[in-house]
Length: 77
Image 1 (cartoon, rainbow, N blue to C red):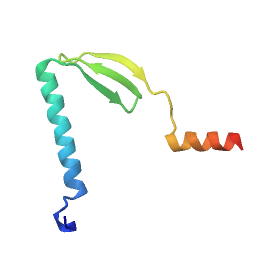
Image 2: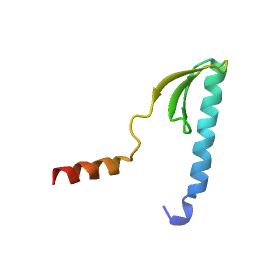
Image 3: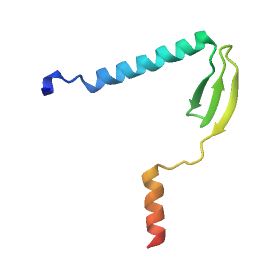
């Protein structure tokens, strides 16, 4: 496959976002609860089709995986 035949990153992201939007809309119509992550409060919610939210969990760590691993490596040496 030639390089010119590939789709752009923007097109891939647009298609992925649209697929997620369609799936969420389908679940709302079917009455299936969806899971939503609120970046501001860092809380995970279960959202029902009537709009009610129930807290399911909270973010456990604030660092990236690579940052945690580098801290462990530094502690061992």
